Length: 255
Ligand code: NAP
Image (cartoon, rainbow, N blue to C red):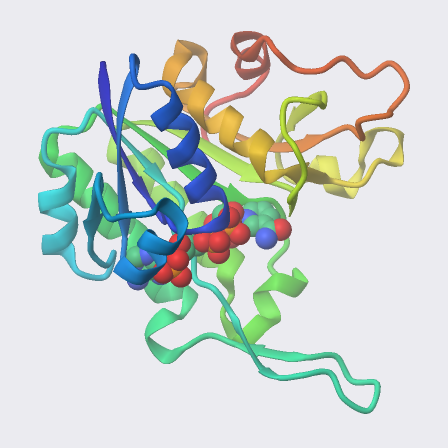
């Protein structure tokens, strides 16, 4: 029985991970960490099994993580629309001043890794994003946040921490059913700069949640960092991924 803390548990992927972990209650005791009791109640019916806190507040993390075996980090800065599309111009996005990527995706993740180190956590699964090898990536321009750059700095910090890590850098996230696709592992953004058969580098959030949960189980996922996308459901010769040990065996360690 492993006790797992899931941060960002009111997020789109975080809530899926927490719900899926809770379905395996013979194997996992899953605790959610999130900052809004109202959002927790809206998504989960009550705040039972949650710790309310903020990743910028080290003390709330330190008490939440005590007694856990593993940490799943699903927090991220979230840009907000500040101007809708008008006159053919695209919408404008910005981050709140206390929610800039440097504060959330770097300092906030670092706070979580430090708390995990202090508590003797054995394994951290961190969800990142593809695109980070390109400093000029469009996502870095949003709100001058350089979000992918800060995410990668946090990933390097995790690797250097000495805690067992699994860094999962997803392609574009879509809200479709999981468990119906062949998943493809890569590195250095090659799956988007040079995609096999020209497929779109996307993946359902439910599939990422499956990957995260299997990363908590399979030894092959330890000390690996990888990009992940999916083949379209109707792709010719696609075989739905079920053997996660073999999938993780294709991944490598280091950035
Ligand atoms: P999401 O819904 O944006 O969730 C982010 C979570 O972080 C939210 O639950 C948010 O809390 C939480 N959070 C932010 N600041 C916090 C703070 N100070 N303290 C505590 N919690 C805080 O995430 P997602 O769309 O599922 O994405 C998951 C990850 O995948 C992110 O790292 C994202 O960058 C990455 N990714 C996204 C894409 C894409 O296509 N969108 C592609 C690849 C990778 P609230 O619920 O209270 O707001």
